[in-house]
Image (cartoon, rainbow, N blue to C red):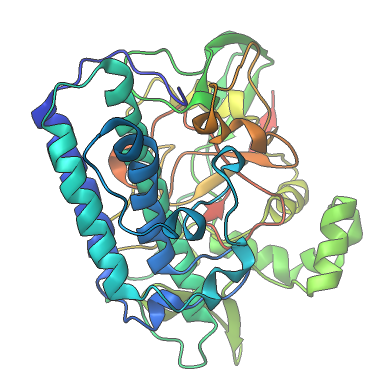
Length: 417
């Protein structure tokens, strides 16, 4: 199994949660035209309709086809079109070419989702064994991951349009002064890291284990756009001594001179948001920076990035509250003085994405969910303004390649004591 949970499953509760998660996906897609939902603006981006279809494929492939005897797949070729990376399930359409598939269209994808939902309604009306209910829960968290991906991807799609259209009308907070950067200290020592069990967790959060930490401090708020603007003005993108070699090569090759979505109008920085272009608020957390940029900024600041164990040890005692997915916001907001460690932007850590001690992927195709990506990526923690609120926890390990900028990624500084 690709996750572990030991809680009892109620048919009514699981059915209600299934309907809520599926409805949220449709609500997030609703502002988009069929044309919007078909565009793929770069290889890492998937069209909106693909996300809607792939999440349906997951339930069809892992639950309905093998476990619901009277279920009939909606279309025989969808297993090829909407498989993402599960090698054990056969051939699949190349990821960089998802945007050339104009058919099935948005209407057919909607019919596909309804077909799968009808099958799942019948499936969830039965008494489910714990391992089957766990697989349903995995499918729901998988769909929540794609809800965030849907918003990340459509932001990139719309940013490529010269009209700079808004995805939605969002609430813009008035500009304000950033709170001073304070430091929260940790005495170090032996700490328990990883999911303790008793509720849902992805396989990469297990097993729980002990790590030793030297004394450290972590920033009481996220790095801000104002601080990043100072980094830019101080030549941060032109000083090779601040950068890892691979990062400096990427800066030169792609001509980075500011975070993704930043642009200048006269002497003012603006940025593209899901609400369209907005004047930069210096108090809000910086967003859409790569690991390379975060590392260079930390070095320029005389600090460093926290390890994922440091971040988890600091965050675990507190509830996961913060600025998460709210269709009226969809953007990082300035951090109050007593800000939570969670929300607004995913926080880069200095930890390579690798297995915990004694980690073993589950057998079969579902075991491909996380384990095979444990190389050449870095761990991020804390969730973002487009992460569903009931999807995040202290032990959640997100991961991206170090050059990725289109996710809602930022950073929190750390330093040794």
